[in-house]
Image 1 (tube, rainbow, N blue to C red):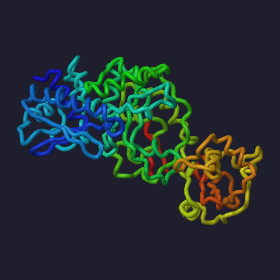
Image 2: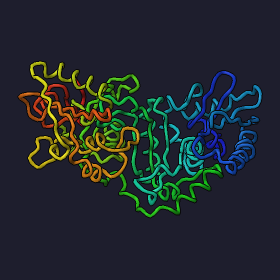
Image 3: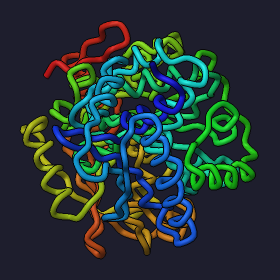
Image 4: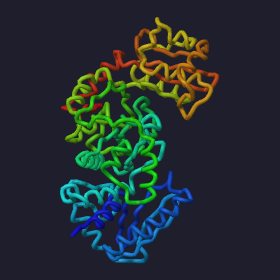
Length: 440
């Protein structure tokens, strides 16, 4: 019979447990904030006293911890029988071998665990998966966020929707969800390979702590500290939230990646609510999503909305585009100043991200591939800087490449209104309900 202590332990296993034939490990991901000497002592006490005590009293197991690669691991001492833990996981329809998150389905846990058992299970999950570093915030420090982070390697979109829905049932207000999909993590550049950043379910800290809690003292202390920073009010609950006009997305080269499960593979999503609604969350603002889906012709680009890089890599991509889609058109090359490209009579003002691209080309300093400093200031200071523009002869609104040979930077920009792009939207996508599928 499950009680709240066993439920907490099962939450730990679900969040970060890996079980093999003879042993198990539970990882506590304190890489960013748990290595401070004062916190290390608190964390060690949490594990050796609270968690170890629960394992001993509920399952008769002795556990300890080890530290490696900035991570903490809970593990059993010597070879001990933990069949009872396997059985309890099985009884709520959770995996009892391998990395549990990979195939975890929370539907039975949600229906079987009630009251303090449900909250204890979730506390265990939060202790392994929730991050409260100050980098998690909605734009500024006045809106600190608790971020529940699920590895993208799990491919478990279903669990993310189940968990967020469960927390909403219990009174939380989700601030934002980030799904492990190129339409969220690589919306502008189809060549960006770093899109596999995992899942994040984010709550403003006051909303989270009003309903939920951490069992580990070290996390509870930090959560209370950052709660005092919050000045921003919660958003409306999900069913009543409006979707602001989303920015257009580029069809990424890895839309058919095996890193994506079949339910989202080769499908386009304009907003995180689009995933929620498509995957069946009862709290998603479905009517808002329908409105956005109906506007797909103004939101999809089969060419890079903005791709940035070196002259060599960007040129390779541009010539690949021209050979594939515009083999009959010559490439025109001419010098243009930043001011001319952005003038009122320029043909390029309708290219969605051209200002951001020009800031990248001319900024004195970069942060990765992002310009460092205010964009308007950079463009004003470099208004007379001469760049090289490559465009396609006898076309309007088709992709362009702009080069800055002085610093080895280049960009590709495109316009959604291009005739070729609109033809590709018509011939290479189809809409089924809320899903926009690629047919190529």
